[in-house]
Length: 234
Image (tube, rainbow, N blue to C red):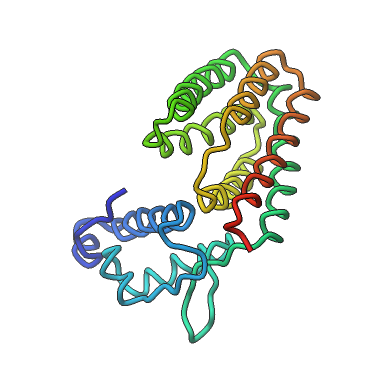
């Protein structure tokens, strides 16, 4: 997502809420840069440089980084400024546990309340994900970005009937923080992850809560182990 080029002052003259819109765009961009690894763990975020790069004022940038600190994606260091949160085995293990708890709970709620429209979302999301996985397995590494997006869309579709915006928002944040570790590992997990997604898809259409929860627990655990085997996490 490209950062906007007009200043906040210009935007403020155009519309009262334009600066908020710019802040939201920059928030998403910085957040994505952290999750993708473009901003590596431990990177010092120099406000003057970041102001130019993201085309936003220092005051707004501070607010954005403080919001990211609430998600533990950024560390606020008082007078010393901000840095991207470090990656650690301990945090990865905690995120794996938390994701498993949240996603298995959301699955139970979603399967109980899912409608025909929900099934349609699951089918569509799995179709896109499976197509991206086939290309990755065939050696087309250029589809990695598509896979990252479709992976979340599929998992989101599975739990989207849970009827809890708080649960969905919390799971989304944990999912992204867990994903950051996969991006640091810099490798696709292969056929096993595609197989897990197909089994999860089949379980969803059958409303088999126990099977889906077991698949998620194994899926998350194997993902964590894959990251640790990469040797890129201390």
